[in-house]
Length: 312
Ligand code: PEP
Ligand code: MG
Image 1 (cartoon, rainbow, N blue to C red):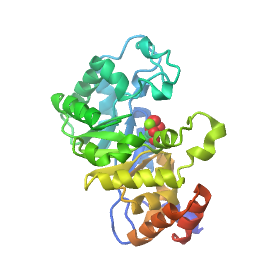
Image 2: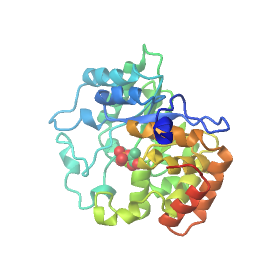
Image 3: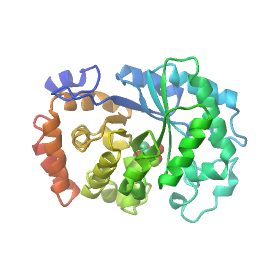
């Protein structure tokens, strides 16, 4: 009964002592909006835009993009859109040049691909700016696969030229976490993609199930990188939008590491909301310290949970 009650908790994300941690939804297009609303998302923390570009031989026109973006932007007060994250791992028929790489995860994916085909990202940014124009939404746009400050600067320049005021970067490459301070000087916010950050930190392909031990987001090395990124943000917003954010205990640990918002698959929202509401910022900090003091993922999980009483 206690568990059922916890899962019905609604309202904005906050710790027991009243520290706000906005709880946001990961969406893949307008079709995901109803679930995000149903589970009480305060906004969208990751709008993956690949759906518009898949399975077609010509890119979508700017008007078609604008309509699809508006369908998400009109439903929420706050939306973080990610520009196209394509590459040989997620190939696009109209961009055949990137299809033949021997190491797709290390190739021209994400922002790297967009830099080679600037017309794609420029069209996307124009469509986004127009879609948001007449809406009350706070629009933030971020780039995937940003490796260094120069890339962050280029991306922010493209956003501002298109009329988008808030340009951020995903932290999903270890170099970006290590030099977060440099990136924060160029970008307005961070969003940590723990799925790719784990893949690149452990050199473990996220599509290879046999390597799942190295994809475990409780790995202390991954938590160290998250802590570096949050500290390097220097007061700018630093969310997490990888799968890790949807684990209630880990959500508390991420909060304790200094992460400022959590974005996840909508059904994960109620349990995370309940876990945060049941613990203070100080408990979250202690859980984070315990996890980072561990030498392996299983110990990190166990020791963090010992600081977070009452989690199912
Ligand atoms: C991530 O890498 O953690 C992320 C959120 O992006 P994607 O899973 O779409 O690569
Ligand atoms: Mg990613």
